[in-house]
Every structure is written in C-alpha cells, then in structure tokens.
Image 1: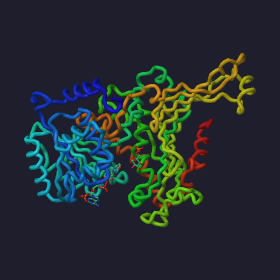
Image 2: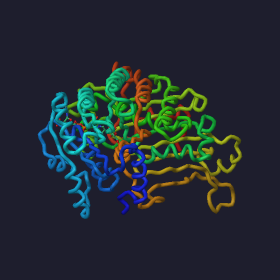
Image 3: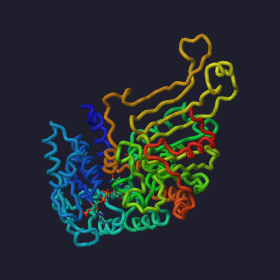
Image 4: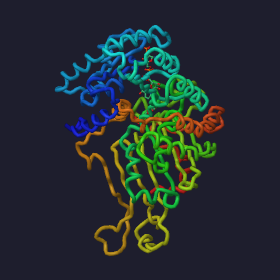
Length: 517
Ligand code: NDP
Ligand code: BG6
C-alpha cells in the first residue's frame, strides 16, 4: 500500500543491513539486537520513538531477533507506556496481530539515572531478554540534558555487550548551550565512547528534501556549474512555524530560537548546500566537507542579526493567538529570549565570497513552512527591454530562483522566465518548472525523519548524524551573538502572533541584494 515501504525498499535495506553483520555472525537472524529507550515515560518517547519503532517493525525492516526495553524512573508497566503512545501509532484495522507481536517484544524497567546498581540491573535484564550477552545494543537517550552526563557514564560502565556486540548511543539535541558547554559535553562523551559509537540526531537531516540536496547538487551538471558566486546572488534558508511556545515556555526561554533551530537545523542545511563535493557518500567524507565549509564562516556580527519576540494578537478569535510570548506564566516578564531571528552569514572561500546566506526562523507566524531559496544573478545584457517595459511593471527581468520546499508538501521548483504562450511578440512572464512530490510521485510513501534516522543507526550509517567537530564549528559561529543577546545588546522587535515575519528582516535581505517578486 502507499503507506508502507515497497518490497524493493525492504530488500534494499536488508541487503544493506546484511553488509553490516560482521564475519563471525553467520546470518542476520542469529544476531540479537536490543533497543533501549531511556526516558521511556517522556514526551519524545511517546510521540516519536515508540511510534517510529512500531512502524519500522510493522514494515519488516528491523532485524528479526530484536527486543525493546523502556527505562525511566516512573513506576509504569509497558502496557501503560503503549497506552500513552497509542494515538501516535496510527494502527490500522488489519495491523492488530502484528501490533500484538510488537508489544510482546517490549518491556519496561524502572530505575534511577544516577545509580550504578540500577544500570547493572538494566544490563542483566537485557542479557536475559535477548538470551545473549553479546547482543548489539542501541541506546536512545530521550531525556532532558541535565541527566545526559550521568546516564551516558553509567551506560558505558555497566551496559556494554560482550564482544562482538556493539553499542550505539543516540543523543537528542541540545548538545550544550554554548561553545563551552558543548565542548565540555563532547569531552565527557569522548572519554566514554568512540566517535563511531555516538549518533547525534538532528532530525532535519532525516527529511526527504534535505537528503535530496546532495543528489540535486552533485548529480546534475546543470546545477553544479552554476553553484557559486558567479551565478548565485544569495541564499535564504527559512523556517516558519504557526505554533507559539506555550506549554513549553520554561524550556524555550532557556534556549531561544537561535539555539533551538538555527544553530542546528538551519546550519546543517547551510553546510550541505555550500560544501564542496565530497570524495564519496560515506559519512566521514561528507562530514569532512561540511566541517570545512563551516570553518570558512566567521562568527556572526551583531549588525547581521535581527531578533524578535511575538506579542498577542488581541483581535484574533483564536484564544491561543491572543497570547504573546510573555503572557506565558513560565516565562519571566522581562524575558528577551527571541522567538524570531534572522542571521546573515558569509562564507569566505573561492566559491561563495560575498554571497549572503540568510538564515531565518520564527515561531508564531502565519504558516508552517521550511524552504531554501536560491536566487540567481540578473541576466547580463539587456535584450528584452522593450518587451519588459510594456509587460512588466518593474521593467526588469525577474531573477531565476530555485526553491527547495522541505515542508509541507515537498517540492523543488525553478522560477524562470518564459515567452507568454500564444502571443506574437516577446512578451515575457515568470513561470515555474515544477516538481511537486505529491503530484509527480503519487502513492510513494516518504518515511518520516525518525524512521530514516533510527534505521540509519541500525545500519551504522553516519551520513545523517552530526559529528563533534561540526557541532563545535556551528557553536563557534553562533556563540558571540548569543552572549550579546544575553547582555541585552540587541533590540527585540515585537511582532504579532500570526505575522508573515518582521519587516526589518525582509529589509535587511533586500539590502543584501535580494529581490522579492
Ligand atoms: P521530557 O521532559 O518528557 O523528559 C523525558 C523523561 O525524563 C521524563 O518522562 C522523565 O522521566 C525524565 N525527566 C524529566 N525531567 C527530569 C529531570 N529534571 N531530571 C531527571 N529526569 C527527568 O523530555 P522530552 O521527551 O520532551 O525530550 C527528551 C529529549 O529530547 C530532550 O533532550 C529534548 O530536548 C529532546 N527533544 C524533544 C523533542 C520532543 O518533541 N519532545 C523534539 C526534539 C528534541 P521519569 O521521571 O519517569 O524518569
Ligand atoms: C525541534 C525544535 O528541533 O524542531 C522545535 O526544538 C521545533 O522547537 C521542531 O518545533 C520543528 O520540527 P519539524 O520537524 O516539525 O519542522
């Protein structure tokens, strides 16, 4: 059906999985796997991790001998965990039998995040459940960052499988709060794990269109020749959300939109868009290039930053929209935490010198959208002046623009100029070469980001995970402005819940040479 992986896809994934099995594992069915969800009682586990594991199991892409162990402090049963997650699992009528099978592979253990004996207990339960002391083990830390250090230490000390069983540790952002804390945490992990064992999730790297950037750039001659400062006038990477921060205001106030979205998701997109061609598609080669390009970016200057905070729209009929950021009782009344930010970065290398990369993100806006807009330079030599002055209000040729829409409705479209059909003269109009996925690829299921990424961890593929040096570079670029914002050096521009954005941000883009058509 359209909802499931195709048979070909399953075969392909199994083939890749098989290649991961080391020589002393005779077949995929003899090796056991244990997937641990640490923080199983939490929101992420409930909404994303359990449903994702269920979908992967249902679609038959997980190894055969697998068990799942949930762990957190709450005294719960596995049935209660599943009940909480039920509405996110989207179980169909004909899936109940397989769902029961999946449930039977799951168990739950309660324990602390800081006591050796609890992790020793977890370890012996895992041995018992998997009937093997050398099962491969995957640990998903679905926990708040204040317990990352102790939990990662206790896992490494007490929960390693006997050889040849490997361990893979999956960690969610935030990876620190600034350069210093991020480095400190990386050093902590480096003492306990090899970089090979660590999988830092940035779920944007699991999105279809983000993954497509590599293919688009490096398998099309038409793009590879123009992907530089000679042809590109500027790049915008835009993230917009309709929802505000209510219900998690206390978390958001510590973080702000720059740490929440720009430092990770948008910087990751930037590095893939701007990097040189990697030597191969291996994780190491790709990440080497991503780091290299990040190294060419200087720390952001204050003058290239615009920040805003949303206020309630008192006229709205929607009660949520009437509330501003500061109306949340968990947010201090004088908070200057930005809920909207635009930063402009420049890459000092031969390919990109002088080209502005505009990273813009905001909560409580008019729509949910994430997209990349690559605007090309004007066509030199004015051949169509006469036609343009007749037909085009501005009297100029519209610029070509390549748009990669990450969400919603994945699409790639190229805005071009064309002769208005049927007219006798050279009347020009702007149109699009349009690859909208749900029209072109009807019925193809796009797995969600967590499905892809968790499967990648099983397969040991590092392409879509963040390496510690990438992280360090991203913090280095962002860090100085975070400090300035904390010192309240930047004016916070108010915008209404539901606004398109902040005028000053659009003006700054225009000043950098962007033309809005
Ligand atoms: P939760 O706040 O739901 O915490 C997960 C579990 O950790 C809780 O069920 C609780 O389990 C335990 N816990 C909560 N607070 C504390 C505390 N102060 N000290 C010790 N244990 C605590 O977090 P989420 O599930 O929302 O997020 C987990 C991680 O994933 C975080 O790092 C978050 O930043 C990240 N993340 C979450 C997203 C989401 O959609 N929720 C999206 C992207 C990233 P118990 O009390 O039973 O031990
Ligand atoms: C998370 C941010 O990383 O990404 C959230 O912490 C944000 O604030 C979310 O809402 C957006 O993810 P998506 O996949 O819904 O675009």
